[in-house]
Amino acid sequence: MDLQEFRTGLDAWLDEHEPELAAGFGPEVSFDAEMAHLSKVKRMTFDAGWMRWGWPERVGGLGGSTLMRAYLGEALAARDMIEPGIYSMTEVLAPTMIGFARPELAAEMVPRLLRGDETWCQGFSEPSTGSNLGSLACRARRDGDAWRVSGQKVWTSLAQYAHRCVLLTRTGPPESGSRGITALFVDMDSPGITVRPIRALHGRDEFCEVFFDDVRVPDDRRLGEVDGGWAIAMDLLPYERSTSLWHRSAYLRQRLGHLLASAPEGALDPAELGEVVQMAFAFHARSRATQHRMARGERLGPETSIDKVLLATTEQAVFDLVAGAVPAAVALGGDADGDRWRTGFLYSRAATIYGGSAEIQRDIIARRLLDLGDGR
Ligand SMILES: Cc1cc2nc3c(=O)[nH]c(=O)nc-3n(C[C@H](O)[C@H](O)[C@H](O)COP(=O)(O)OP(=O)(O)OC[C@H]3O[C@@H](n4cnc5c(N)ncnc54)[C@H](O)[C@@H]3O)c2cc1C
Image (cartoon, protein in one colour):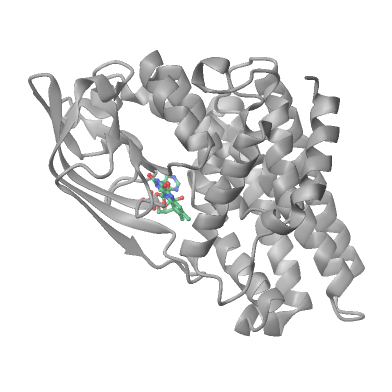
């Protein structure tokens, strides 16, 4: 199937299934309900084939260009059928899993994620390790044909729903930095794991603290080499900073369209609006170019920090505009529409933090892309 056929076929199918796929919004829609809806959308699109296009056949996909799965995310976001944040985890985690897991493990697990039968989480950050990821301390020690993991992760999105975790552990000595890290694919129902949800600013328990107390993980769940986990992090972070954010562009343009249609007369300053629309299209153009690079098989790297900066800047500008145009909704919420403006505004504040903070992205751009050196 080519991309044009895919788009035409998918659009027709989505038209037909609109009532079943439409997401609910408003203060009465719980996060549990959002997660259940996401699983339903993934299951329906997988069973109808759409979710399988653009993924390799060896992991349950139907092959074809990755642009097909990009279009699926874009169409679902533009039609308000998914919440883009929770949808993005598949695009963050599955590509690296396919690249680094044993082929049999990837073949067994990835279809479960694509179909929405399972949720996965990403265990990178720790209480004293965020930007300085190479200093992480959650320890894994060798125990025969397994590892024993003890330590803590934090800000682990969706951990309370997750069946598996892509976990970075310290296997070298504490001072080994990025050279002593090993990545494991951990079953979240293993004895010794405790998950405590954390309430985020927008009122959802989106992320968690996760505690590991002597958790046994078989060595055949290792991703990549022993002490080679940094390569997994460096492979995964570019997806988290670029391709997984593509459908956020559709969401932001959808939100801007809705604001234009519903803002009170005279509430929008045309110059400010023009600037925000320009930013939204610049982010879209950059993100589109990155999708095409991935589709050509190019390896994504530090240049994806540009995508992340553009997304964060645009998302906050869109919701600053919203706050000026409908201030009561942003301050108080209210009905489904008002609640969505409010939660959207509050969540936009996290855009300069998740996936690596704005300062760290600018640092990567300065040092690695612009060769501005280290000040020595
Ligand atoms: C909504 C959300 C979801 C998340 N989901 C996950 C997840 O699923 N899994 C996961 O592992 N993590 C997750 N995170 C954590 C996220 O990756 C970290 O918060 C982020 O990397 C920043 O790390 P930190 O919070 O430890 O802040 P710190 O690293 O302590 O940074 C604090 C401040 O100092 C600045 N700073 C730090 N170092 C430098 C430097 N060298 N130069 C200039 N400025 C610097 C930072 O920019 C920031 O402003 C999530 C975060 C959010 C907000």
